[in-house]
Length: 93
Image (cartoon, rainbow, N blue to C red; front, side):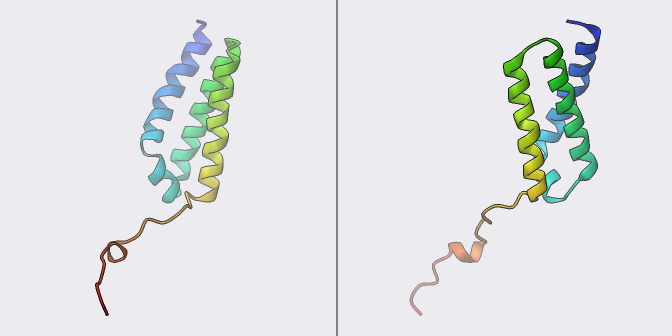
């Protein structure tokens, strides 16, 4: 493994894992810096695998790069969870 690839992975994997562990709050709270670090880290991983000519690893990580960008762009919108009052049956009238 070249020094460049090692440097890309040494930066990319720890940074991306830290952000992925907190990804839902990063998206919901619009943490731009966290997201920018994540994207830079994943891009480093993709470049590292591209240098090593590992096409499947490039495809997998590049796909996550795009999915993460779409998820962040949409703001994490999805079906809202019901609140506690919706889970309680009030009974008859």
